[in-house]
Length: 375
Ligand code: SF4
Image (tube, rainbow, N blue to C red; front, top):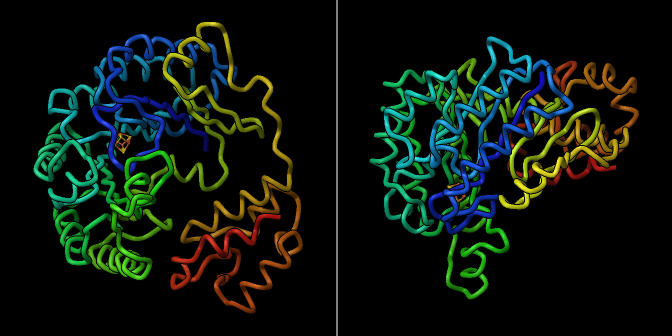
């Protein structure tokens, strides 16, 4: 499978924890940005490639004129061989997409919506700098249903300042009652350069400790599982048949081509990315720049390591057969030491024949396990 990622770097306002490549207050640049993205797509050296997923992320794609997104999607279809059954996702924030906008996006062929809710608690939403209330989220969700979206994902966060396990449980309950097909649940990370980082350094931000975070994660796994959401990746849960195909491309080392400011690509064994800033990106594209120029092929060792630590994020783990098919080598030979350590000593890994995976009770320390697979 191969995918296309399009990065829309505009937001209404910056959230207090966010270090994504997104900019508030410059949405008037979105029209010239859209033209640059279309030009980048039309001049891509990967033109006509078979594409199984398209993901329009950000930023907040829905905070700009929907016609820009629709025109970008049309350019993708014109320039690539997009499968009829392709999963086409757009990220959306409550308060930036009304029924009319959602209907236009659905009619343009977007069949999956990923809505950032983060919490059902309005005080918490305000504290983390979100622009919406929980009611705005529910209105957006039901507008999306009315517009014909039958595959909706909801993003949630735990480990937020002032969030108790009761508040988290209440959010999980409310969201599962609404019934999206997919839920992502990420713990808050305090990233450098964000207002939260500043506040934390000055001792002005208190967040739940590691034990409380772990308890919230375990609550999510248990409660979501009870309500029919299966965990298929560390932070992702879905009803049967609604796993994110686009993200599965990332986790299984599939190819993806990125367009837009700061978008990353992995194609032809090379990784490359576009300039981050909106003006820099527009200038780069208009001067005929191409992110892939000069990008070097990754070494086989790097690719084998990535295969392991990305694949171990998945509940199903990594396939020994797939590894052999891809690299012509025996996984147990290449990763002898870490596999012996975690299969036989720590017993953090288990095997069910072809697949090797992290035991559920070790998921919370998966980063430590995965780091042993960097050669
Ligand atoms: S809406 Fe998303 S991308 Fe925009 S500032 Fe908030 S977290 Fe960042």
